[in-house]
Amino acid sequence: MKEERMYHVIRGPHVTEKTALLAEEGNKQVFRVDLTATKTEIKKTIETLFEVDVTKVRTVKVKGKTKNFGRRSGKRNDWKKAYVTLAEGQSIGADQNP
Image (cartoon, rainbow, N blue to C red; front, side, top):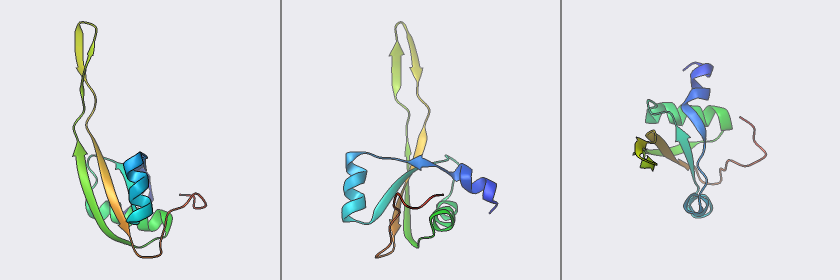
């Protein structure tokens, strides 16, 4: 996989209360990823950029919400998130730069 593609696969971390608990308890990280990204691409990208071992990747496609803007209705874009399980003793911290 080209290095250029790696930087397009991962859009950024998805930080919520639930993902913070997953990071503490289950050694899992959650990322927003490209809609066209596959599990193997996500795994290779995380392992290369953060120099960690990934044991499992689970993906979820999130449907965009329908919103009303006055009399007009619109729809937010669909997006994809990936739950990445890291090997025991591994972590992605603030001291690592992609």
